[in-house]
Image (tube, rainbow, N blue to C red; front, side, top):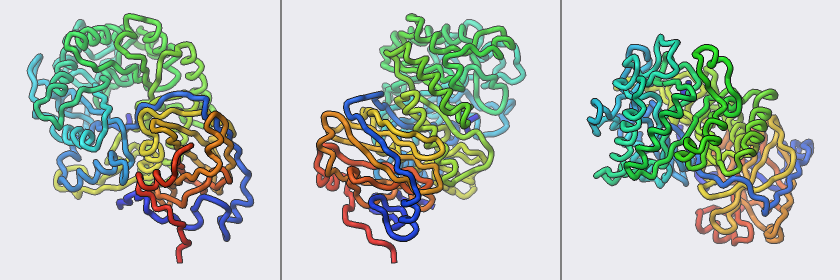
Length: 536
């Protein structure tokens, strides 16, 4: 299971109580005096992972939202993909539907048609609404695309459904011996998009995910297909062969583990239930040259069930980091997460919980990509960046922005593909203040992200080390604040060498140039660098 428009303008005015910089008068000053200073030391020469992308998923809501008016669809596309007024996602996950299934899926927002009419026959006019957002992502400059398969098409499944239904014995719903047919189905679609006569949809997908959370049952509720480790290997090998035959540059991404521990542990529960191995995916992929050949050195996992403090959040990620240290040539992506709780939440409560997960995935696991689950949702669940109350044609096309959207934007809009994380030593408090820093790819480009879960303002003292540290003494950084009152609102430029404050319950991204020219940054980004006056 995953399930008022503020422009976020960099010209937005931040209230005096939220300004970063030296202590302000009044309430903000009092809070500042009470706060303990957080000391951080940044080593500009100590690099960690290179970032690949931040993204979200189109399943399955875009089949519905894609039928909306052009104005409202463009509004959503701008929120998701625009790098000035939106959150600037750099990756889009596109679902290859398995075919409408109303037998075991009651929610029409959890099943979708398939391109395949029969084996080797396709109707490329299908999934038109999802394809609209695929085009929109490309038009906005998104350059990384994932093709996702939640279930084989119904004609390739054991039970003719897009999930396992009542089947409690089979290790997978793929028909026995149908691995090559499944691989042909996937590559036929990938080739179509690569060679698409419509340039707007001409996309060579960077990665394909043939399985999603293969260790789970997926009996009801949505498209899904479990797969034991032997099933995974057979299909991966068949797909690698087909990808090479077609000349596609697309690489396999996986295993898409539904939790973190199964990346490095063998899950005894499924093994006993279905008498097959599930989990221990690092070993399955990285230690088998035959399998790893199709993966181009990237693994993927989901952060579900590893977000509880204190027994999961940090311990699970530290253990995964240790396990990954045995495979230094491999990168890893966190490719799906939402808060697995009922109750729609548009507030900073969920936004801060998500930002904490992002921070821990990036700093403890060294994830090079981070993707949220539903780009848009209509349920009463903590699953959407954007929410709508629309269910059926004729309903109002409502758009409700969550703070989750803008808090993710504190990462996705500013940490662009090719930037790398640098060492930032200091207190990382998962119920207080956390911080991470990224450089490049432009010379001197620097981004610092602070997540403050505390109910009070936090003081920061920052020290720079490394070859370029001497150039930081008078550098100005622009803060972009997401809080209960603001959405990526630009604050007054701050000289980070003098110390500064992070507002209570906020996510703050500070953008500057180390060794660069701040006036060039102001001109390039359209930053209003004039001092901000207190509201009357």
